[in-house]
Length: 53
Length: 244
Image (cartoon, rainbow over all chains, first blue to last red; front, side, top):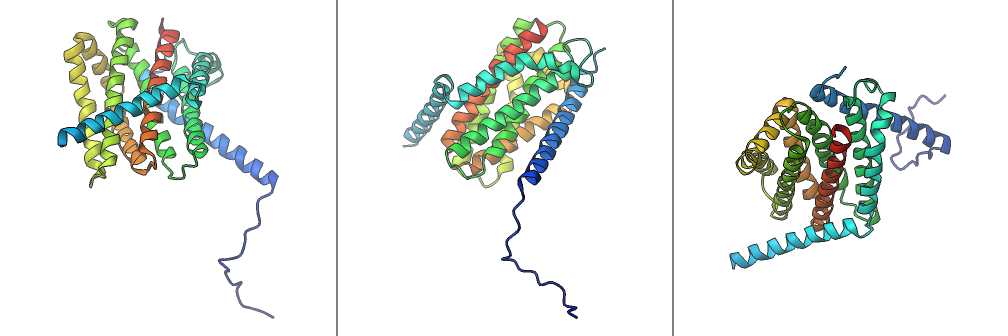
């Protein structure tokens, strides 16, 4: 039985992400960008312009 | 000798500003940015009712936030496209995107808020003073351009100079333009609370970092100048569209 922990190999190549993974990450990043960006701008707009009725 | 060097620097600056203007009107990617930006500032207010607070009486905060958001994205897309297209791997464009985004927030959110809070100023006066304020943006940009060329020991000192220029702009405008200018800047500063001084300082810092990283500072000046022109022209369209 081998109890040694796996050896870290800095030269090991990471498995490239497949297309579905890239699409999922892209959609999440885009959603995050829109959500965070619009939240910041809405905060500034409401703070300066006011919440007109 | 010193006069010759100064004259050369002025000439180089004017050449870059002229090139920026020529690129803007000659079908360059900048022209595409201006056309897409114009389409967006006309369309965005119609889309705002789908957002929170967007159904409130027009013009409302959601309309300005959505307009600014689209312009921030378009500006980023242009700068990245421009940098990658030139094979410029110096990494200056995210900083340029950041300082231009701060300018977009000032022009498309804080400025309309200032107008709304300035009931005694007519739209024509307000737009005129806002266009005069554009000169101060260009002066700030030129200062950053020359400061980066001389590799200052302290970037914070350059930022401090820019903030002083921004504050001085208020008093110069008040002197040159009379009560209209004074009122514009008073309301811009008061309406935005501490947001505006913070944004001005942040814009100055980000611009200094952008020019410090730029492999081609002349190109960065051209882009910065053209973007200031585009944003101010679109700002006029927005002000007329929303308040006239």
